[in-house]
Length: 154
Image (cartoon, rainbow, N blue to C red; front, side):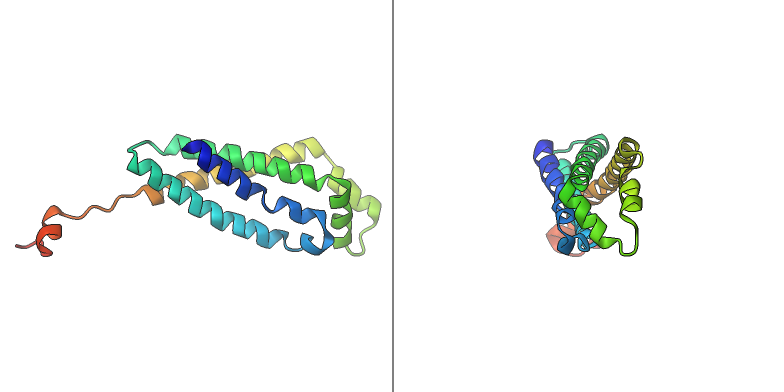
């Protein structure tokens, strides 16, 4: 079950990455990341409900699923961002910036930036996953007499 949710989240986290390959879609990247956030919250809530139905703990599994999938999705995004076609799309978004300056900005400390961005995204989505799974796993129980009579005073 965790593998299924993890795979689905990896697809969601990687979904905006192809937007960097074209100058026409590059400007939609922020909107794509917003939808990733919304969809991931929904998936984490569903994961929390699924774990609650099975009476399983949710903190460590959802944190790890969020951490690993967001880290991996950020790696995919960073890889695509470094492709020549994505670099050309990146350059088209920076009006008035010299090509050398933009390329230096993109390639400065590549490894450190990739690891840092991936770790920050992974930890953020790990924490978000725990909170959303807790929210989705909450079980609201009714008092047994309310279900039978509809009035708890009788």
